[in-house]
Length: 132
Image (cartoon, rainbow, N blue to C red; front, top):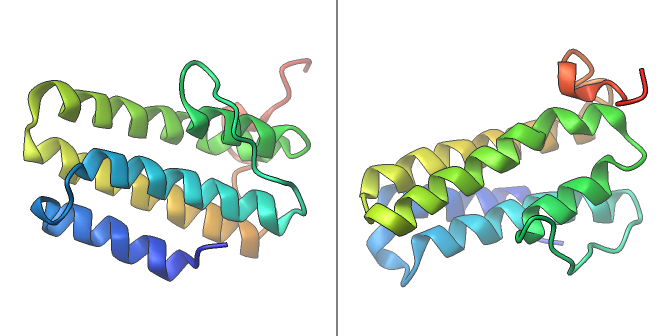
């Protein structure tokens, strides 16, 4: 398990000095995956290597949300991270990396907070079960 502080440092470095990485988008995607891996590991689940809609990040989210409906609150954050990174891959605009890093940090803060306060995310409309 990679510590949240180490992941946070990677996100900050990608945001502030993206040239330090051969592919800052890949670094941020890995950071997002590590964040979700922390959630799964903390709940005694083995993180999947599968992909959902072409992304491991979405498969990890789905796995984490399986028994915790309030975890759905970060689903759109995962999708936004993918969107920002895709924009960067197309345009190579460094501003997209800044935006993606901000989204990755939002994901980190939510997951870290959720690990401390179980009820976090219950306010979100995405946290309700699809059957209700």
